[in-house]
Image 1: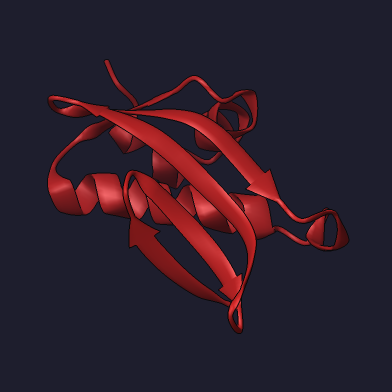
Image 2 (image 1 turned 135 degrees about the vertical axis):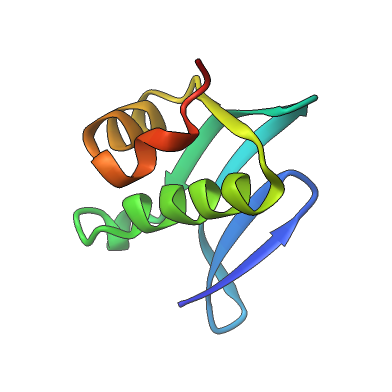
Amino acid sequence: MDFQHQDNRIAMLDGSEEVGFVSYVENGDVLTVDHTEVAPQLSGQGMGKELVGKMVEHARNEGKSVDPQCPYAKKVIEGTEEFQDVLVK
């Protein structure tokens, strides 16, 4: 899978087809994750967690915190110790 970051979203691509994305709103030093979606055929394969991981990586690279308003992103970040450093305090 390839990833493309553009316009406050990170898309997961299988060839030229978008098969998932995570979107966010940027507000100062905080990236508010508002939606995570993966194509049904990829459900249960860890692709959503991989997308959230890309979001966390982006936040770290930009020196920003993440406010996961999307229930899935919140569950993944709070349940993954190595992602918790970016949680908004």
